[in-house]
Image (cartoon, rainbow over the protein chains, first blue to last red):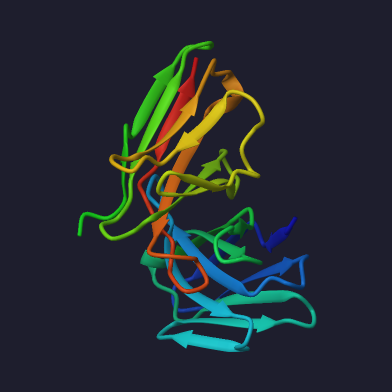
Length: 111
Length: 115
C-alpha cells in the first residue's frame, strides 16, 4: 500500500517567517495530494490540495508543490501568523477515496 | 449546512464492552469514510462505505470491528469487546462522490477511552 512520510515532526518559526513541510510517497500511481490542518482537539480541515497533472498551486499565503519524478510534495506557508499554529497533515491517494496520511507536523508560530 | 456530525464526542468503555460510534454525513453526501487516529500519529484509513454497501474495508482489523451505512440513519462503527489498544480518536468523513473529484469533509471525531 501507499506509505507517506512527513518531515519535520515539529517546526517552530518566528511570526512573519515562512514554514515548509515536506512529504514523500511510495506509490507512483498516487494522483491526489491534499493537506489538512488540525487544531488541538478539533477536526482536520482541508487547506489546499493538488492533483498529479499540476506542479504547483497557490492560495494566498499557502502554496503546494509536487515533484512526481521524485515522489515528493511540499507545503509552503509564507508570512506566518499565530493562528497558523496547528498540526498539518499531508496525504496521498491512488484511487478516488483512500487517503494515506503522513504522521503530521506540529507548527508553532512564535509571536 | 451542519457539516459532518459525530456522536458521542467522548466515549468511555471498560475492557470487554461494546462501543458504537455514529456518523451523520453532510447533507447530500452519500460516501462515508472512517479513520482512526492514535495519539501523536496521523489518521489511518479504516473503511469506505456508500449507502448499504461496504466498498473497501481493507483498513479494518479482522476481528471485533464492523461498519455499516444503512439506507436510513447514520453510519455506525461498532467495536466489540474493546481492549485498551482501541483507545483513539475515530473520525468519519463524507463526500459527495469519489475524493478525486470531491473533498472529504471531516467530523469532529469521537474520542474513545478504554479503561
